[in-house]
Amino acid sequence: MVSTHPTGVQHSGSQYLPQRHDTSANPSPNQELLPLTARVHHHDLLEIGGCDVTTLVEQFGSPLYILDEETLRSACQQYRDAFKQYYKGESQVLYASKAWNCLAVCAIAASEDLGIDVVSGGELYTALQAGVSPQKIYLHGNNKSREELILAIASGVTIVADNWYELHTLVEIAQPAQPIRIMLRLTPGIECHTHEYIRTGHLDSKFGFDPNDLDEVFTFVSQQSALNCVGVHAHIGSQIFERQPHQDLAVVMVQWLRDATKYGLKITELNVGGGLGIKYIESDDPPSIEEWVKAICEVIQEACAAENLPLPKLLSEPGRSLIATACVTAYTIGSSKVIAEIRTYVAIDGGMSDNPRPITYQSVYRAVIANKMSSPLTQTVTIAGKHCESGDILIKNALLPKTEAGDILVVMGTGAYNYSMASNYNRLPRPAAVVVANGEANLILQRETYEDLIRQDRLPERLKNQE
Image (tube, rainbow, N blue to C red):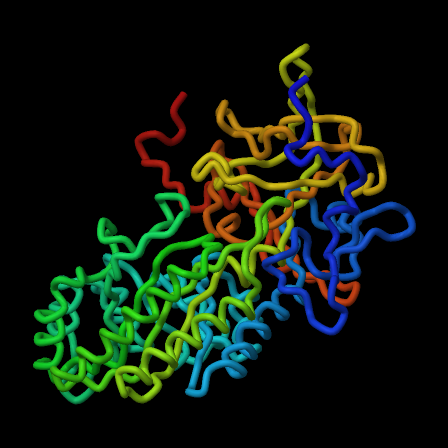
């Protein structure tokens, strides 16, 4: 069998429960492994939002996404309130909904006075159907279609223009009497230590205008009566623990604001993006939401004072740090395979179709057995998915109690980029999702059926009724 768990921890799954070191302050969700409401009740079962996880699986099936409403709301409130506390000007937090865009999540975020950042027509449509105000929706994307732009214009949302093709398209389809509200996405040339697929601020990126084109871009936009340019936007990446890159970004963006005034542009909004990381494993040590917001606000205010500029409306667009910790995924354990002196595989009823991040980004997770929360951790196993793919491994070297078929495995921190990147690989139906709060569970995503899988299939007439 392979070596022990990376941390060498040998006690029960309760080690992952939220730690409240300071009872006077709410814990920052991004610094926890399990949702804030996670508890072990007297029957040694994991409970989230007042709901027994094993009972949820009995009721709704598995795999099952379980979203804790209190954790999501707490993260929204901490972002919103920290900006109000540390920024002297107007601010607006936007939920970067690509992390998990569905009606319920958008509605919860909006009810906490957050806006929504969308990156496609489908995400935009969902946010609108969830009742989000168009004035609080911002559309991103490096290759928006004409149809998506038309929908955005008709809806009255702000469009974050990413490139020359898009600017020219917007001018073509604009109505003279109704200037289109846009922001400009610029690439700041700032790198951070994260996976190369989620670094978006360095110069070699598909996103945004090159800073060397700043003069040409500002000149063009200032001459277009069809475009109402209200702000600039930049984003440097995701799952970031360092404070300095975001502080450097803030200084660069204030310089852009200063330069824009030379072209007669009245830039009133500045969007610093998001990217704050979360705790996926014990050794992860991200700043708290409040610490991140405070650092950004201080630098923006200092830079504006140095340039003698009025404070812009300050926007940010966190995604992962709002939603990831709020959700866990529950699976049912099935088969196992012991390879002597090498590895023990334990298989679950999901895998890369409901969580593609390990095979895509080599992402790491922690897990517990929901029905054995206090059992000794005696097995080091590899959690394998059920797909016909050797790389369908969810967790390597997971330290767990002795597992049996029928046990409920709970993987933590699955709210971001799990459902949103889910697929029907091997024609597996996508899982259901529930939101839990105060002992009540409500379905927010219906489990797909086999009928759903073929709903869009079409069989040519010549292939029907063949013998």
